[in-house]
Image 1 (tube, one colour):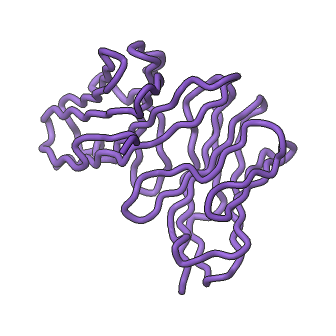
Image 2 (cartoon, rainbow over the protein chains, first blue to last red):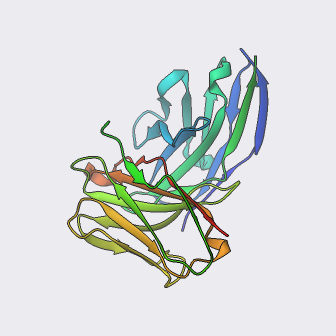
Length: 113
Length: 116
């Protein structure tokens, strides 16, 4: 079974700062990779996903993530955060054709105005 | 609204009682998943259905947990003889069969269970 680790439990930033959240997984085969976001009081929403092809994927709200296969990583980035990016961010992985997702513990991001 | 819906959104029960949660997936999504999320953790997979067939249930936490999807549309998750450790958020997700194992799960708002 795959496991997912997210490096930071809580990140505090000021508006306009850059954000990078780390995600590493343990599985040697082909994987699908996801970042989900949960805004305060809302449900989990898909931010972006990687299945194949260009390892740099772009998602909603200016987020992007880079898949580095050799490092088993799928880090999330945003060049300039806004107060509205305050949320909890989850990295998730599933092995291709194994539909259950394995999630990291999540990173709470607080953006100060 | 065509998203995944769950009912109830909150449930408070006493230890030993049975509870049942309902999930309505996105229309025409043939796969439906149940996850559990406890405080400070990411969602943990419990079980999933393809149409009405329950294809994996090994991760259900004990034999007190059961799930059904009788007509391949909505699903129910039942917990019998609840314990305080069952307190958590129960999430439902749905997806449609993607090509080559590529599919995206869409999550509902969850049912938050508190067992007193």
